[in-house]
Length: 305
Image (cartoon, rainbow, N blue to C red; front, top):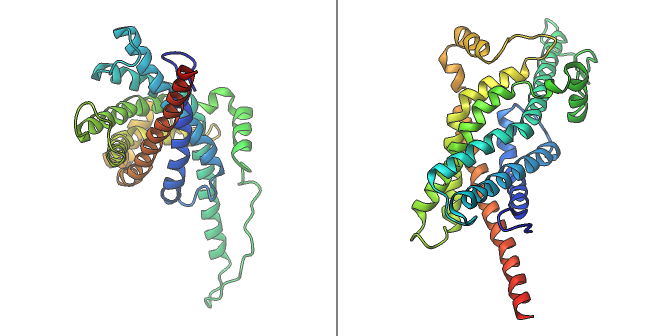
């Protein structure tokens, strides 16, 4: 699990496990949030696990690199400035992995919503004046079905918009994730320290769960305005380009829908963020404890030999 004194692979593995557990907990709420999007777990499980592996692995290893550089010891406790730098760098790196994933989710969501509206319209069109409905066994309009699935969506975007098309909205995502992860990891660390019985002991699993849930709700609520802009930028396909850039998207959204548009979904994000992030942090920390206990046993075995 360990390659050097400061870089560890177990953080990435624990992040992967934490991401998987959060998908299982948050998938029903996520399905409600995006109106029935993703009936199965395969795509979110495949993407969120990798995403969280990168996020947690990078954050933890960056903390140790900063501590090693500043204090000469990778395991020296990080100060608030150290945590802030590590969190902001993590937010920046997360965009490289998360922007294409979010783009595909948004595009597939849009397609499903369009098909739902078409199905409802065709159902109404099949009704006659006496109230009798003509049953429609299937609704399939080839011209409206742009993507057959996530892989086909990625391929289509690359063909029509190029590699930069996959990073449509990445600038807005940076505005969301850099402060978002700062308000994710720092509150978690603060709450964990406050909930510990003393400074030398490790936080109880219940404390980890509570701290992770509170940090997740705080992060998601404060990130909602930037998330709204990001989603609109990513939904803005090349064929029907609506926004010229981030600033134009903000101004246009404000003029047409008012300031409240930037807080649309904030309550859902807060409710959804608590159980997902609570489970994610708890599983991550417990996985780390397990991996490091194995490492300690190996070290003891070597010393005895």
